[in-house]
Image (tube, rainbow, N blue to C red; front, side):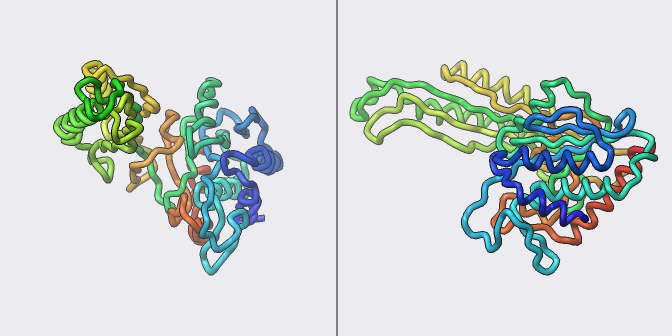
Length: 343
C-alpha cells in the first residue's frame, strides 16, 4: 500500500457535509492501530496518539465541499491521468491526510524520542465545528502542529485573522409615495456602511504588515439584504461583512467603531467569527510563507506549519493534484516528523 492507495480509500468515502464521516474515521483508525497508535477519543472527530509526551500533532478534516456538474471523472474515485490524480477532496484535504499516513508507515515510530498525535476533524468547510468541539474538551495540543491543507508543497507558518460581522438595521414600513411617514432600514444601512468604509480606509487599511502578501487588513461587504418590494420603504436590512485581519490590534479597533455606529443607527450587531492572525517562526525552517486564507491552524496555539499537496485546486471542478507533489509531500512529512520528534 502507498499514498495513492490510501487516497483512493479516503476519496471513496462520501464526506460531503460529513455524510460518511464515520466510515472515513474507521478507516483511519484501523490504519493507525496497525502502526501502534492508541485511540484517545472518537466521536464525529478522531484523536489517536503514539509515544511519550507527544510533541507533534497533525490536523486534517474529513469533510469536502459538494461537487457540481462538469466533472469528467467520478468524483468519488481516484483517477490518474498522466501525472495528475483526480477526485473530490484529493487536494482539500484528503491528499494531505493520505501523505501523512503513508509517512508514518515509512518511519520506525518506536525509536522517536517524542510522541505524535493525529486529529481528524469534521465540518471544516462550513463552520469549523470539529476543531471547536475539540477545543471545548480542553484538549492539550502538542508544541508543533502540522495542518495538511493544500499549499503546493510550500510551508506556511502564518495566516491572517478573521472578523466576520452581521449587522441588522430596523425601519418603519410605509408606501413609497409617502416615505416621510416611515423610516428606511436600507438608507440607515447605506449610511452606516459608508461611515464604516471611510473609517476602514483612513484608520485600518493604511497600517501595513509585510509578513503577508496582501499586507493590510481587507474589508469586504459580502451580502446586503433589505426590503421586500420596490414600492415600500424597507423596515429591515441585513449586511454581512468580513475583515481579513493583518494586525492583532485591528479587531478591537474595528469592533469599537462598529459598536459606535450601531448605537448611533440603533442597529443590532452579531460577531460571527473572531480569529486573531498568527505568524510563528519555526527555528529550523527558512523561507516560510504566509497565507491570506484561514485554516484550522488559526484555532490552535503552538508552532504551526500548514503544508499540503498541489496544485491548489480546492473547491474546483475536476479537483486534482500531481503524483509528484503527493510523493514529495510524503518525504516532507517524514523529514518534519523525524526532526521534530527527535529533539
